[in-house]
Amino acid sequence: MDDWLIYRGFGAPDPERIRALPPPPRWRTFGGEPRPYTVPDIDIASKRRLGDRVSELSAHDAETLQLINAALYLRRPLLITGEPGSGKSTLAHSIAYELGLGRVLQWPIISRTELKDGLYTYDAIGRLHDAQLADGQADDIGRYIRLGPLGTALLPATRPRVLLIDELDKSDIDLPNDLLNVLEEGEFPLPELERIADRPGRDVVEVLTDDGQRVAVPNGKISCQAFPVTVLTSNGERDFPAPLLRRCIHLHLEPPREERLAAFVQAHFGPGADERNIDLLSRFTRDDGDGELRPTDQLLNAIFLTQQVTEEGPERREEIAELLLRPLDTRQR
Image 1 (spheres, rainbow, N blue to C red):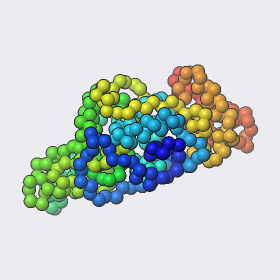
Image 2: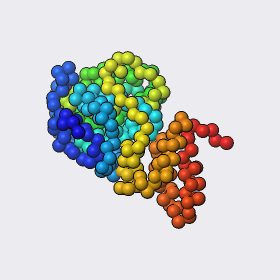
Image 3: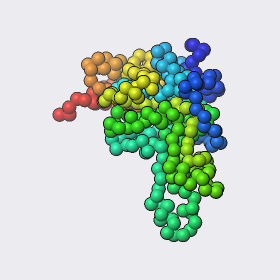
Image 4: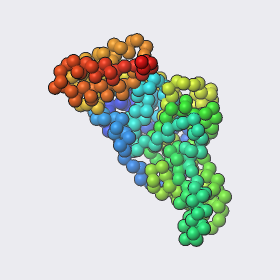
């Protein structure tokens, strides 16, 4: 194992390892002033994806580890492409778990997603309603501003957060270009706060984060210090603009096979699960050669369900495996 690697893919927590990350290159240095706030531990979303990650089998090959660490060192987004089920999103959770970077900030992309959805929302209607009630709450504008996943990831801190921008290829044509400036500069303004920053007592306003906490924002602008570990995923359904590609480290993940697939099964079903279900693993990898689409979730489903019918004999096990390991792109008859 190379000593320079920060993320090693061991599948076990090593939170002190992030301290070995050297300062960023000068062109990726950011000047946000860190303000204290508590980063939540990984949540059920990570645990659901990772299972029990402690495994003697390496989850990634050398090239994959080098590209992941290149993104960490250079403070650049990691653009991960690959088929559904190849582990693109899971990788973000694995990095957060191993390096002790807390809850993954998840921003799922759909066709109507805009940049501001990831930065923050301002509930102007809610504030107007409270003002009509004349209860005094409307004076606190920070109560009506909530940072999105991207906005929370850019809060100034000494340790980076992990941000997962999932299925960017589902977005409309403008979002990849709109992301460029924020990912390059590591900061963004909140116009609602900028307009009042020169008023007495309004230069610092507390707003809600994506984690549900209150954090102070000075002068209506958020500027990061530690650039977030940003993972962009794509199923390859569209091409991205060249300026975005230039700013990213590109990693293509093949579907997990052999040792990586064995580690994947062990993580969810315990040590030795790959050997106990070698027939299903062999069938899964053999059938994969036909070019049909079979996400690894299907294998997990098949293993789980066949475990429930062990007393009914091998024929029932084979019947269930046949049903659950069908390729997704086969037309139903």
